Length: 355
Image (cartoon, rainbow, N blue to C red; front, side, top):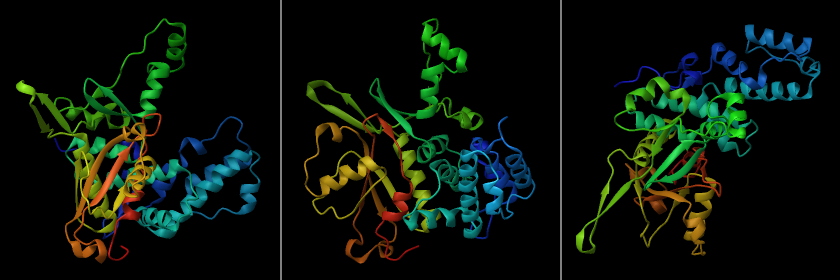
């Protein structure tokens, strides 16, 4: 099945593309941002806030004076609009979402909340995957902007959307009524999520904004044979392989570099020269391993996967590591949550020259 649309709530339809294929913010996209819950009017909103919200709804790119912000009576509202305007002005000055994201991450000073950054990453991935017909890749891409809970179930390593799983655990999907019923014991939690498979993959495109599909990250299956022999088989539809394909597209789109990424279960390279952690936890683990510092078994157990990354053209790498693989890691924190930092790949690859 070829998707015609997915993640309809990410604002992608309000964006334009430039000649490079990068996303240009429009007034419609700025209005979409303005409609976020953080900026929504509430009954207590003062007249000045209502006037500012209404005027930005008509002319979302207009300059807002310090006096207008100071007139907002609620301090939280002033802060929210200040942050929004800083984010908006950064997007407009950069010209594209891609340029803004790269500039922000390379600056070393991220001055906007993670909700805005995740919104940009989702729009970028929606652009990267616009021709995608593989539901596994689209689901894997969600890992780059939505934290995932990792669980082991019947030999499978499953990634589930943290916010969705937490909501279902607290309310059974029935809102406040469900919360009360669960607390009273009148209702038992029920799993309203399902593992993405070849049989239900077509449903993903219509339900993508619900984030209720589990992604099976099991890469290898081990079958016990007779006489003490075992047989290992790599799964063709591994979620880790789908994530690797997404990361390849991510690097190609934003850096213009072609790479091949493959999941592996161990690193045996005695000449290991370069590594990149996809999150805070794996970065720390790989750093310790590289420096021959001991890593406790409990920390090693948090590793979800290792990957190798190779450049299609070694000349695009730094001369001192040209032709060598880059090793990557993915790990959970102590709560079993994976929070991928997609900027790590863009900032930490051994490129011959900045892209």
